[in-house]
Image: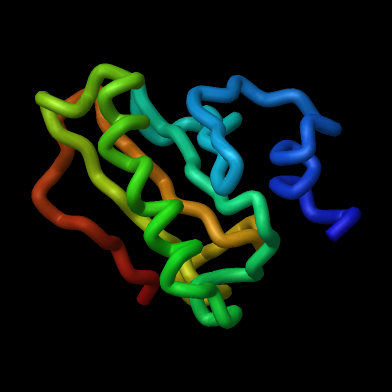
Length: 116
């Protein structure tokens, strides 16, 4: 997908602070972090979101590297949150499947805040 921002990052066309990469995934720091650690993990193959026919193998690749990325970012022992925003109601802002790894400070109890 030529216009996809995350596809362009995965291909190296757009620079990012790459934290981890292999043949199947790329992890890079979010440009608008919501916490001291805010890293995204994406599959190199373009999927709009989790409802876009993602194979179990691709999901395993994405989620399988989360502990390693957390270790690389130094939050594996203190704790981190893993979030997937899937579709417009979840406020997914980039149409490429991605997992947020968020940590680096204590988080509040609630996980979500709904619009009223």
